[in-house]
Amino acid sequence: MKLEHILLGVLLEHPSTGYDLKKFLDNHGRFMRSNTQMSQVYRSLGLMESQGLVTHTVDRRPGAQDAKTYRVTDEGTAMFLDWLTGPYTPPTRFQDPELTVRLSFAGFMGREELASLLDVEIRTRQDEIAQYRQRDRREDWDPAIAFDEELAESVKERLHRMGSAGMDAHVAALTELRAEVRAGVLDSAPILKGP
Amino acid sequence: MKLEHILLGVLLEHPSTGYDLKKFLDNHGRFMRSNTQMSQVYRSLGLMESQGLVTHTVDRRPGAQDAKTYRVTDEGTAMFLDWLTGPYTPPTRFQDPELTVRLSFAGFMGREELASLLDVEIRTRQDEIAQYRQRDRREDWDPAIAFDEELAESVKERLHRMGSAGMDAHVAALTELRAEVRAGVLDSAPILKGP
DNA sequence: CAAAACCATGACACAATTGGAATAGTCGGG
DNA sequence: CCCGACTATTCCAATTGTGTCATGGTTTTG
Image (cartoon, rainbow over all chains, first blue to last red; front, side):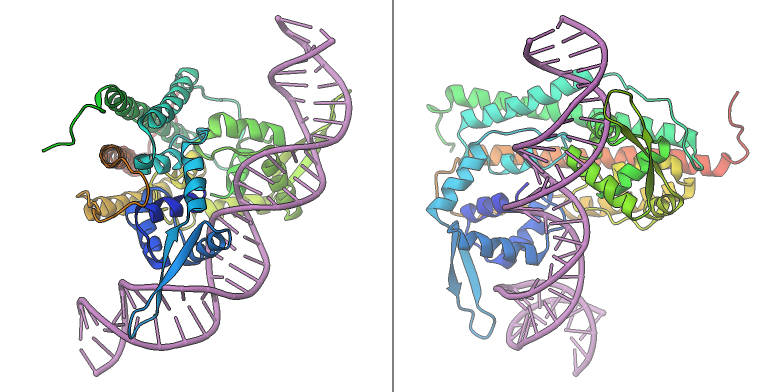
């Protein structure tokens, strides 16, 4: 996951200062990325500005330090959209934030794009489930130092169950979402926007 | 997650070649780390060897490329154990592999160590749950480009539910495991090792 | 009132990691 | 005969991680 993409997406929703972005990453955005430092945010922002992806305007705060509000340029928007709707290669670990990040910016996608993104993910994980359905241990080892085999076995067993259950839940939730989106694609155009 | 630690742990269970390690990371170890490249494995191995954490013996394969079998040295073992039983700082994202990796090597830990590792994780996540129990949206924005608000909302809603449910399941599973381990601590010493 | 926490930016630096491509050769199977 | 598995290694650019230093105002809270 590139920090760049996250930042662009957030800035597209509303222009912010570096500090705001950092706060976002610590709160709402905490599922997108672990442990982001201030310096990373500022560095990334500076870099992106030098590449013409964002610009800033100075926000004078009388008595306090000036704040810089960043917004995305047209090139930045293009680059973000290219990434967002571009090819998605599911990471090995389904828990990795790749998909979550993209889904967080679903508002910038078309429904078909979203649907096909979900399809790719779901297919991938279903294949994995099929492939690794049965817990395939590898028995043969001889650890060189003290090793509590009983403990190791029971922890691994549970880890495996946690993983499987997690993957199942993941697929189930995405499948539901996909169904919703598919339904939306078919009859959302004529649907009115609510009360 | 340092690749180094994973590699040391795996090598402690049984000596392997770089190629074997890569295969492990793609199969059994796929929950520990995404998309590991050959080059990373070999580089890491080389580095560790230069630091005296591992050594290799050449495994001559007549006609084909020699294979190098790596094993962990005493320093390597010490360093691994230091890390494994050392302080654990839960990452922001509970889905991050930090804990999984440590748990995968539970066989090298004592039961008390394992129990306290679990305690740290469980406490951390419970606090997070308490803190972010209610979905706190941030309504105020004005996206600069086309934005499907309805879609965004429904995806975010589901993402949030997936996250919460995942976290709950995580905590529940770890709590069960902890209970097992605690029970084990109390009456495992006198327990006999089986038939 | 004093300490802590929040608001705000940004340079600099080094280590470490990532992701990818390129290179080279054997062996077994279809 | 071609392809995939097996085995190893090197190089590079780009990112990340982490941390430090520097600066100084405002708000909350004990």
